[in-house]
Length: 170
Image (cartoon, rainbow, N blue to C red; front, side, top):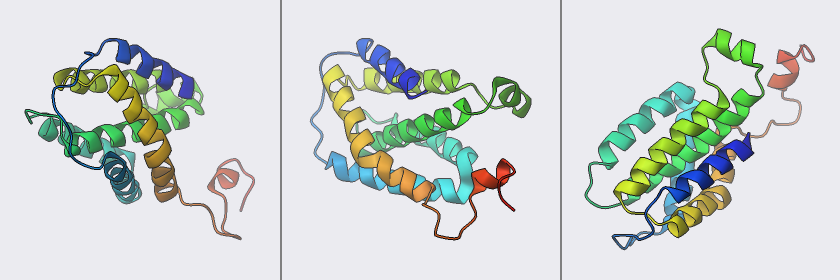
């Protein structure tokens, strides 16, 4: 599933402009780390539905700006991290079960995220090189924080949710 997201990300990069309009003045790594922590907190509090609602509002607000900004960078980072994890989780669920549950296919999650990225990167003339650097920053600096925050490691002796769901636990 990660390959689907990476492939879609690569395809969307070819659709984007090759020049950036503005110079950003904030610390991108610090912003991505902060976005990852806030995403993990939101995910624990409100689940995936709350994250999706927040991201919709985030894009609607941040894309009104005339220049690419720190807030939109946060939205994009959070969207990328959430979409990637959600697609990987849904990829583990058989298609018949996903249909019965009304959850989207992993490919649809990746396509939707790609469309949002193309819209944002095109609107703010983010170059392919900048988009690739952004993805790398999120993968290296944001994703580990989000995963640890949203899905903290089990403590010794704590029941494993997967074992219980599969009939392996009490």
